[in-house]
Length: 522
Image (cartoon, rainbow, N blue to C red; front, side, top):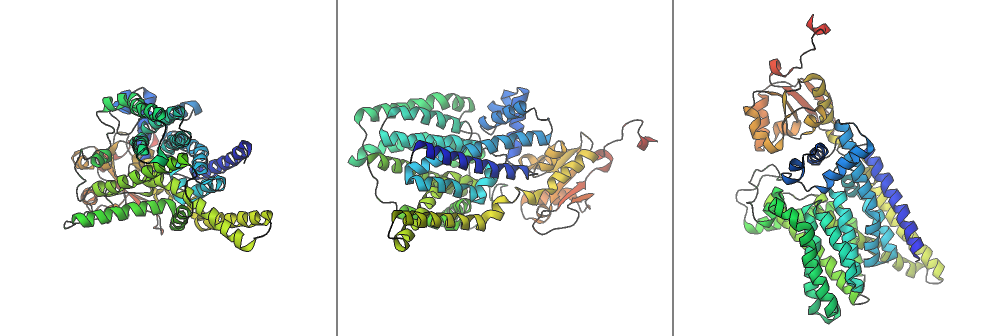
């Protein structure tokens, strides 16, 4: 294939991804809860408060800085919707721009047919679109990380050290977006250490020495100042637990999927962690594509040369290391979701694309053994049929609005904006009602302080928080104290939709006072 044809494919696939992500963003009313932190960081950047946005921030700064830049460049309003739109613009652009490196990585690993199939399949899977169209940092992170993986593959293919310069730059940008970015230089270093052990993997001595020096010095120069300022590679609790510098989450910690069994043995904990990791990967890829990926890896054949062998080793190290990291994430924190598995999901989807292509080739060999044109036609039809099955099977879920089952929190926020006094505190574990209502208060991070605040005027919660077994659910029930909600959204319960209730805890304090001279004062 000519470069022009590859470029045309990439352009068409990028347009498809942009249209899909744009549609999802346009139908999203409530952004993912983690996005509230990124928006708060972006607002701090816009204020020039670099201590809040960088020095003391839990999240790494690249994504909040991008949100602030988009908000300013687009001239959006300073309200909740303006900041949400800015974050979604950054996410959608990053998600659409992910197509070129994803295509090139699949092309390098599996060939031209798998390259375009990998891009289509990746965006047809529900998890990918829903993560990339929301206000999460994964899109920006994966953009840098995947470009870094491709340039690393080019280095291992040709042995030309110049390819490591963009690799290290991308690794630094990925790390400044999310701490997982350090996986890229770590995998590079591990692959370089292993290449001298087998004759079929070795680089020239000069290239190996230059590459090793660059992999050691480059990340230190880019990442070192930030690590020194923060006092570690990341300040997220999950990172500290992952590295063993903080204890595991308590048995009933907020982040756990379910309370930890008191009698859980170490063996059972390990099995549960591996199962949690597998479920996350399964959710990010889907079961049929996992099966196709297994077939694709089995049928890919031996490496054509030492460069391809080195590239496969590098990808295997990245995938294996991240699998172990996800297992430890579940073991120490009690959770692991499909969005955490996207580093694994993208190369697995590329392997699934190769598996689909190989199935098409076998069908072509069986039913069109004659002319080359006939074999190509059968192969193309088989690949198109596979994509159509995925599109039909997962299309409704892929196109479903993001977080639509929690839209009641946005309505509750609008209600608070109209009824709550500006200084009335709100207890809202999810944080959405406070954000959309522009009211201060307490969420998961500090919910234990809510009961001691005399200005706590409202509580917002959906049904699960009122009946759950977690400690924070008991806090919700204690604060509600048998009160009836003053408003519920939606007014009537609907299947699959969380009904969100607003409780008035201190009527004399919480009600917004009418302005002097208004009709309500006479």
